[in-house]
Amino acid sequence: MPELPEVETIARGLAQNLTGDVIESVWLGSKPEPLKSRPGEIVRALEQARIAGVRRVGKHIVVDLGLSPLASRHKKPKQRAQWIVHLGMTGRLLIANPGHELPKHTHAILRLRSGRELRFVDPRRFGRLAVVRHGFAAPGAEPLEVSFDSFAGLFHKRKTPIKSALLNQGLLSGVGNIYADEALFRAGIRPRRRAASLTRSELKRLYDALKEVLREAIAAGGSSVSDYVDSNGDAGFFQFQHRVYGREGEPCLVCKTPVKRIVISGRSAHYCPNCQK
Ligand SMILES: [Zn+2]
Image 1 (cartoon, rainbow, N blue to C red):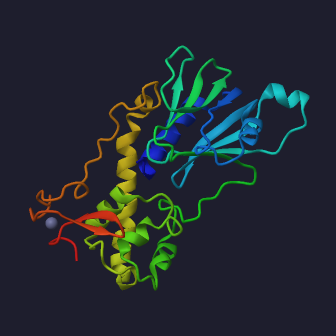
Image 2: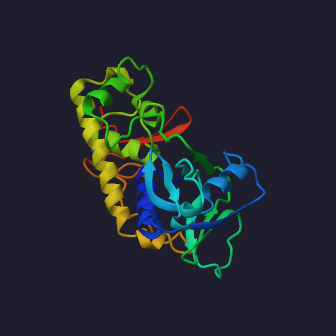
């Protein structure tokens, strides 16, 4: 499942490749799950829109739409809309030439003025497409931008394990299982600790560690952006090395104690019982 760094990398790649292009026409598949807005509404917002930019908000890809230079001469400017894509578990946005074979599970095709197509492919159909007209905002704070005081305030009085609080999208947007485990490891904090029990200095370590792992992962993904958005889309992506996530039973990279795996609220958590308190 793509996490914040992957979504950031994908959004940057799409921004590089698509900004300035114009969506000529839109095809939507018949499966209802991926469409969070009405099909007609999606088509109306996208067709003849100029792609003004692509960016990440939480784990969403936000495509800012403007009017195409051609359309704006003939029509009254319509309200600026945004196309919101959530990749879910297996969703991908692929830039392809129309001649490229259409992958199975293609749910949307945007035909672009440049002659290319932007395809939304999602075998498991947890991904979502929507359009909004009043500015998209993620429910939680942006982990790379939140101030330390606001970050610390999120966990104040919270009795849930810190790991669950990190994954709570209403508190922080876009932090997933991998980077929550990695941040807690670097901060030396056990995933099961009650959020409210963390001292201010522990919270500061966690705040710094979370930004650090997210930035490192974004940097690791940045070099393979062009691979990701080509027609096959699943080219080798992340060089980011996990220190605890997925390493159950393997020696801790710091102290060689075997990494433990536990389950908290149905999600696995990995930690070093020696390095994390
Ligand atoms: Zn250790």
